[in-house]
Image (cartoon, rainbow, N blue to C red; front, side, top):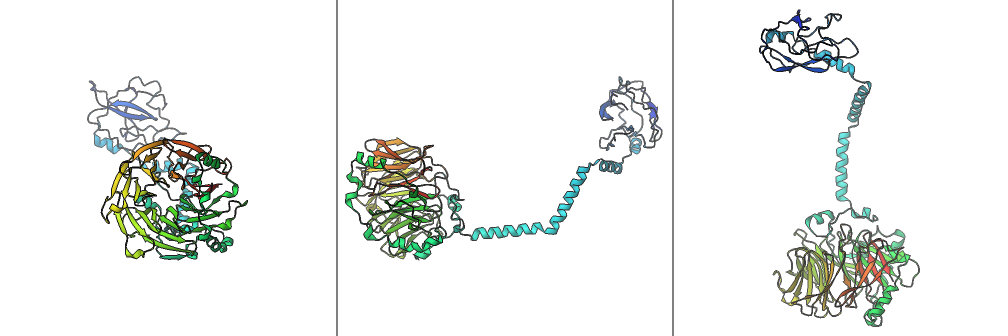
Length: 599
């Protein structure tokens, strides 16, 4: 039948159906009644027909497929199907031009008779479908079957389970030392460095080292220093004697005027051998040893390692033998200081909940305090020396512990509550020695306390005053000489100075805008004082493309003093910056564990 066949004429369907193979003549009713329209498929096109009520159309009947390339056998939807044995040469009742009239009367056959005439050929349909399958499809199915057989022979399912089990066990038992030379840490850390439960989980499950006393061989980081230089580690520590670290007041920078100090800072340069990788990963804390005969800088990193680097100011080449790294902390080392009167003593605080003292002369590392391992928020945050050998230590639950390094750690520790959550920094007033300031990121405040009025295990006792901010703070430090100013760094992109002549009523003295949004992978900026001056501070910078360190003049107003930069060797963000207390030199640490020294 032609594809142009449209609506069907009555006169071409007035033929009787003989058996199941021929069309029977259909009688035309005298009165045509409007009946629901049903669909008739003729050579891929749909037609609308009217039938009597007694004829029930069953759309569930499967329509046979029409093959192409040969004579098409006409099959109707009503079950009046032409048999494969019908005469192909018989004239088709469907003409090309006879489509003007498409409404035809239905046969008076009952539904049972129509159903009896329906013949389905599912087997022939499946055979036709199989014959129509392309060669590509057959090859594809064969390949799938071959691969499935190969997978079954290799037992890949069991092998996958064994690999997953082995990988899990290896990951749990491996140490961070296996990847110590990697400059990038795989542990993510929040942009604000909030010490929450999720952050502590990201630090890994490496247990803390609770050994009371560690020897040099136990504490040194063997994987970070080359084997040929490991024999010189003992000589490095022995060279740092107390007699070589005596202070010389004639070299103090506080004796210089601000203009003379500025000229000295502008004369500083960064040489190639004054830049080296001191610790394996991102630097969190840094301290400069107060010795006038040389330059020794200590840096603590995210993995917990603590590195020491001794620099010869008059040397012309980098000497790796004067570098050593210790590995007695299992989580970030966030605070490092040298002893107030004994500079050969190095104190370190880590988020793993331990506070240690390293005697570089005796080459021993003593555990002074550790938090209960099963207690919530058991990390330690910061420490400050209030008198020789006596420290205030910030704990993760917002409390402060008083630690006397001369006493036995097992005798107990006095603690008092200062904040609801973990604090950031502790700063002791340099003149009184009994007043100290704490910063809380959770409460967004700086609080000033009187140590004499604090009560053991009593919350918020001895509080003199507080300064509230709109966003979290990263630090607050008293000026190092007189203590009449408080320098704060806040996430609201400001560096502020508060007048603290009256500790119970501090007032804002000056502030300056500064980009403090370091992001996820850079340590938070902390503006710090020069240890011998109350009128100068230093902080890192996010400015680009030229990386630099910014120095500010602190007075009635905060004004830019100068910048330190080097186009060739200083190309990263120096997030942690520190003045040398007695020499015209500045050290800066970045997120890759490198320390740059301008001198």
